[in-house]
Image (cartoon, rainbow, N blue to C red; front, side):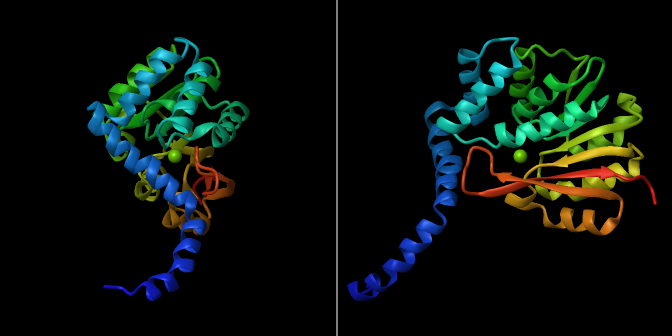
Length: 259
Ligand code: MG
């Protein structure tokens, strides 16, 4: 049994810890605890619950309304790791400024990023988005169709990023990727980047935007990018989506071509 005097001695330390890491505790509460409770109460996945909300609150055929509704749900109801409105603006700007013709998104999740990219694409451009979780892909498919995008603009592929990258050329007829948005498992960032390099799908000037390189973080990926000499590189600093107080950022890479 711990004596009250010892417990009291630790109190300032515990309070300091809670204050210092309050945003991380809040994130744990919203992303893990609330999700577990809602999973039990609703027998739906978090992504299905988000879609139910979007379906009843957003305007069909209006991508802006769908994104705004997602943002509201993720800020006020449950946490979900979409790119979110703040970092999303950087993504929007890069798509508009660079006008890519062929885009690959790794990590569709529930379709938020795909809708965000597709709404900024020029006429005739095409987005391939990859999701390995079948249940999330079902939700994403409904979100994409609700936003009004057809298969000519936006194609959802169910599979692992590794599988899809290796068959982009033969199965999907893609010769060059102008823009790649990485928002899947952080441990896959580096192997997938190297796979893209080896596949010959990146051309001089191709852009790779990688989310969450600071939190949860992708240190091996960043170290490789800096050392390889294959990229012009910059970081867009921000806070974690829907969570002020936790620093995050996106890495923007411009492929310089084979040395
Ligand atoms: Mg992300």
